[in-house]
Length: 257
Ligand SMILES: [Zn+2]
Image (cartoon, rainbow, N blue to C red; front, side, top):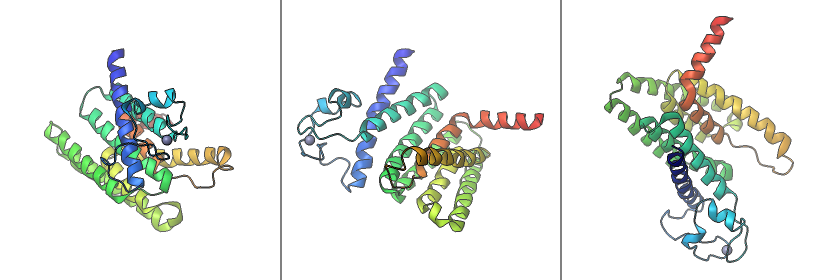
């Protein structure tokens, strides 16, 4: 069991290293396949020994082997996060369609979060691909035996999420980007109804919590605002994992009052 967990974690690390490439090459407007991986400073092509997820960063102590330039900590952080998401998915869902859904959505959200942190945008193209992936996965549930009403349920989630965010966007355009509004449609589709309400609550709760922590810790050093996309992402992953449980817990507490 431990070995299987490790294998899933390591596969996640490897996928994370690919997601780094996708996000950073998107930011640089480069192709995902060409040119081969190289140091952004000295442009030396990297050998396979420099490209082992997490391990290479630790062995090289965060510096390029050839020019000693510091390697961005974004790389190992993203690799580690992806490994954690893969393991998280397996521990919650086992091998199932939900496992696949979770790692696919998680991977999209990692790429979107990297770009949102760096440039404060959620690119339409990537949000659109995640929507297509979501639709295919939800149809997959129906094909594998779920009731067709599931699709209506997911559509309801998407519309509620979208309308809620669109309303905020209209009332307070400085506080939210159009990308957040589009992503809320996709994430609403993934989490469905009534979990959409939990997702909305968590997004704003975690977003405010993150905002306060950020103000008190980093704000003095970093002048930029905090992107909202990563909070939407984390809330969606929590809702997919424990949404039904948390909603039932909430309802049972309400009944007691
Ligand atoms: Zn270098």
